[in-house]
Length: 142
Length: 142
DNA sequence: GTCGATGCAAAGGCTTTGCACAGCC
DNA sequence: GGCTGTGCAAAGCCTTTGCATCGAC
Image (cartoon, rainbow over all chains, first blue to last red):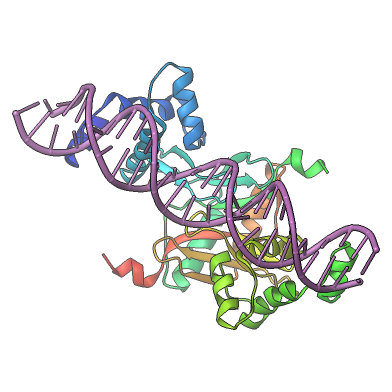
């Protein structure tokens, strides 16, 4: 289930740009969250040319393929992370002030959210919650 | 603790526009969530003139005063709701497909989130979580 | 009368899109 | 070689801002 075959199944092509994009996230590992602009810059830093428009297009493509996951935060724009193959459940503590994102696992949060969703007939997506908070640095800072 | 005195404490003035904005949300009650554009349109429907720029400025002002609360969702742009005086804790099930928002209360979710935040030194904000999900209608729909 | 608030229009981010060319299969 | 993908620049959305005027206090 390589990138090439995944693309092929959808009638789409493997291009250097797509490889570079996915490679970027894989190199960073699972705990990192990048905006389109940051991804573009990081590729550029490595001398890998991908236009910003293509970065946007590819982020969307890889997300729709389930290889990346989009964090739905209003603060600091959209961010993307590698969608771990093991589907390990994790949540995000998002500092609304500096944008720092810390991951945590908490079956209790998920269970509670799932129960609530079920009561209302909703179906939970992907089990990733974003919890708005202030990080230690921003808490102490005025 | 009227709007007038709250504003006065901050050295700011009570204007018809600000009264209209807060009045709009109070009339709708606590379970409603409006975008800037929607708020502008609803005022317009009542013949209450407030420019869109002022709608944006006032939404920000009332939020900073704690009278409104901003929902931090990426989908469908920013939305605002009345911040209940009783500070009753509630969370949102947000349908990522149609934008429908359902409220629910769940001390368990909050407790679990709070515990996780504490472990990481974060301070939870306002205790409102937004849970991304699919509503019943969008679940059954292809 | 003063100083903050409003309205308008212009400017600003971020993201998407149209089009011609490039390059994967 | 056909047809998808890319790059570029332009267009789009949503939101903020500069500036002259208005009006709350």
